[in-house]
Length: 126
Image (cartoon, rainbow, N blue to C red):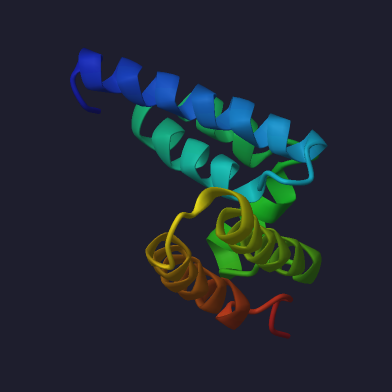
């Protein structure tokens, strides 16, 4: 276990990500699972009790377990993530960017993330 200050910082970071994940469960523009994966990591370094709680949670646990055991991302989650990334690029391009640099950089970054997501399996190999 890390020192107390680091442990409490990771614990707070874990709960921040749980909050963002819960918010993402209700807002279609926010991801959910990635925040819970980050929270699970933070809890694994700071609180085995909260790690166990999140990992075995009836609603949020199964996607975390599928990721942990098999590196699987469900197809609906993949499609939603890529659609939201594409919508973000369009929004930034139309309403935020003053030149082509920001949309190009964002497209490169999110394109790499989308490629990673899309190349993960969406069901457990039998």
